[in-house]
Length: 210
Image 1 (cartoon, rainbow, N blue to C red):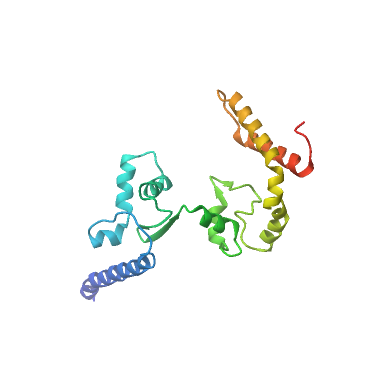
Image 2 (cartoon, rainbow, N blue to C red):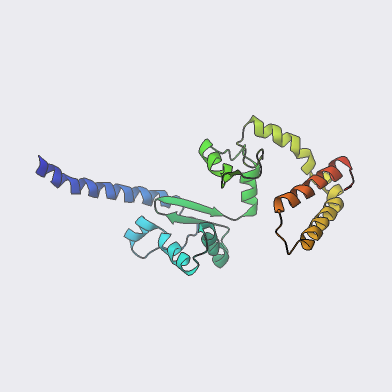
């Protein structure tokens, strides 16, 4: 019995490996219409590593860069706005097209975020992205719809045109404050919050900066 198990074990491992390889191959075929980084010449290494070996080579050249920076090199070198990166058994789609990114972030009704996706995008370093109550990281629920309806009038093109002069003046004052503090440590959140509050007060309620 033990001998039979020992004989069957390599066969089962081989079958499992072939099935895993076929699964990865068929998953990657879904994205074959996207450009992709250089892959190893060996089909076996392609299946196992994907673009990992090329990313490791780039990491060795630029050890200070993280994964996003390394992926950005493909965009800069090839002019790709969207491309496919096989990463072990994962398929990463890197999108740098501003219109597409804006649609995904600004329309969770169409691109509704699952609980897992919302959990992953919810925070960076333990801090909620885009603020605690941001509509950009809100799932496409009735809560998001309510927030969007409340904010939408303030971002209509006709209204924004009437406030551009005030917004430009506030931005110039912000640049002036930062310029004066260029040789010191700046709390950038405090400076941006101050300018944001000034813009809301000035454009929304006609209050002066005083």
